[in-house]
Length: 201
Image 1: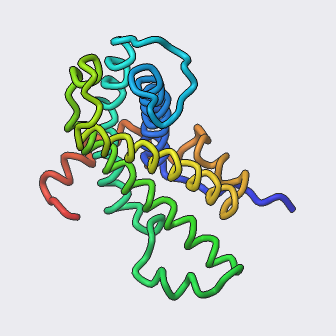
Image 2: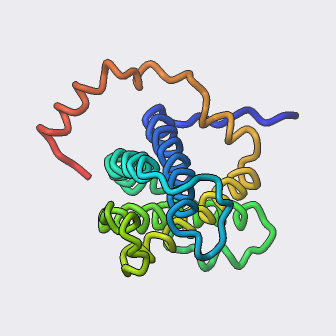
């Protein structure tokens, strides 16, 4: 019998979708910036040096900063069960069992957040004039290149573990447009006001 997709909270799906779009855009535009202005570690030579690519990548990075902060807060405070638990080492000893795959999935989610943190932080240290001036050896720029690689690998691992742990049903649940009545956006202002009156973490 085909498993039915699990239900995912509306806010999780929204934050995940926005971050996914911005991350993929940042990865693609980041590679094009590197490919056209640097390319010392290999490249495709798709574009000549184009300042607009730097601006496009910077725009993705700008919006990703805010989207990532919101998603990180949600993940740590509300979606903690989707991140690596304290007993990860013990669960990883049960090789091949469902709990082992699910723990690997949690680790992949956690690694994705760490990789995003490295990318966003190193991105804020960049100077848009370095590449046009041929200044390719700034530690912050090299760190951002490394962060790009880690983020790309983390995304691949995240997708792989999602497919293994939850299969197509999990992917379908993340793009499902239906939501429960209590999650309707019209309730959000009241929930925010309630939280401001009684803050809790």
